[in-house]
Amino acid sequence: MAEQVPLPRLTEGYLGKQSKFDEYGLSNVSHPDPVVYMADDQTEVEIIIGTEESTRMTTKLLSYERKQECNDFCLVRCLGPNYCYLIRPPTAGFYKFQLYALPSGVAGPNFIGVYNYIIYCPKTHEGVLALPKQYPMWKEGCYLYEPLGIPKGYRGGPVHFKLSIPGAKNVQVKVGEDWNELTCIEPGLFEGDVDLTPPYPVGTKAKVNVKFMGAKFNTLIEYTI
Image (cartoon, rainbow, N blue to C red; front, side, top):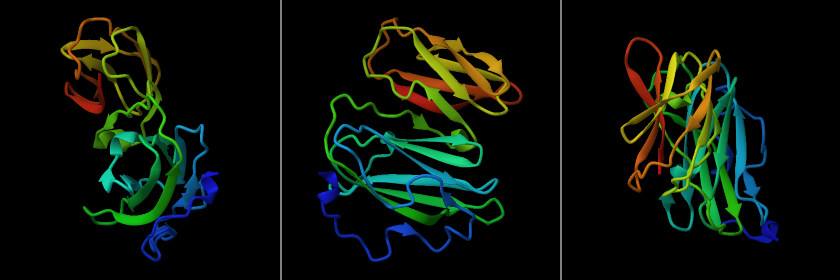
């Protein structure tokens, strides 16, 4: 059983709350235990942190054994005051998941470490998809419903996109040089199908570009297809 696997050696005081967690008004909406054991058939885990209004957060996902960052396998999605972190470990082993925060009224630019998890994934699962790359503006209240990943080399179609982007006026998925406008279903909610049947070169970028004000588009998330 995964629960019987002993934890790796960690610095004393590393796990769990750090000194600013409560002071910054943060809470564990899910997973109050900083040690997370995934089941054998589990490919992902979602950790939810509650925040006070305007608190900014960032994270690092690191493989303990390989001593390298795996941030392509962590997606942040925002629901109200909650930061929802979807984590898909690419291989078996232990992962350190480190959360950093900075309230809006605190001078930056350095975020402060506020909570540390250790996650154990007992099995390597075939076909685990990397999550889309996220740009800074994405973390300002956005939520991705789908797709949570697109296999490299996929040229079937269509792929359905659905996103919540507060304040957005226009949302387009740019694949290579082709622009695909999503439909605004209600204020801040966009969805639509994007055709991936054209013979795009492997490694083509599919970017979700968003216009808030004026004529400029900003890239919020990016897939490599």
